[in-house]
Image 1 (tube, rainbow, N blue to C red):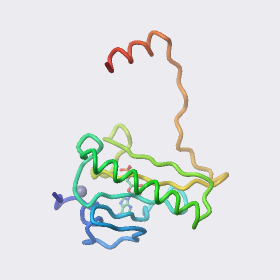
Image 2 (image 1 turned 60 degrees about the horizontal axis):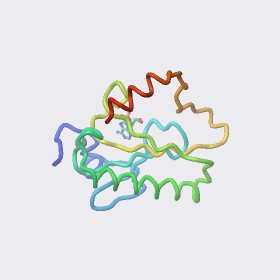
Image 3 (image 1 turned 180 degrees about the vertical axis):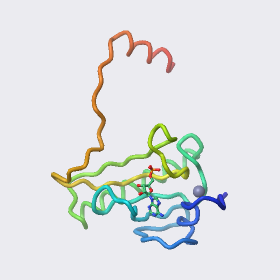
Image 4 (image 1 turned 120 degrees about the horizontal axis):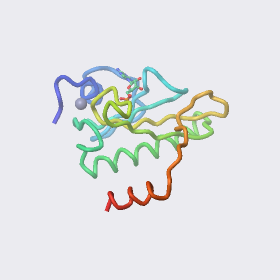
Length: 135
Ligand code: AMP
Ligand code: ZN
């Protein structure tokens, strides 16, 4: 199902033009218009799923498979030094467009980006409590 009010539905299905790096029956990979680094791409399903909680397992797996292929191709063609595959869900996690998308962000030595978190601290009791809550 598409969502008529969703910009990524329109882009994924070719109703709004995009710079497309890859396309098949289920997905389109586009260049992000606000790239974190050179070659930053988004894997978009052509069906509308808001986030990781809504997307069916096989669609999520398929997006990751294409993300992997893109990262490999970027290494060959763009001579990247690494990649972050990032997928944000809900506002608290930084999702700004509520249509599932996987970021494929090429990394270059000294590219000046900071996408990793600041490590925190947790006691043994806290870690044990989480394991119990997740059972
Ligand atoms: P997120 O914050 O994970 O929801 O990521 C949304 C991403 O979509 C951001 O990196 C934006 O730069 C990108 N973006 C928003 N609108 C467009 C668009 N029309 N074409 C390409 N990328 C877009
Ligand atoms: Zn959509």
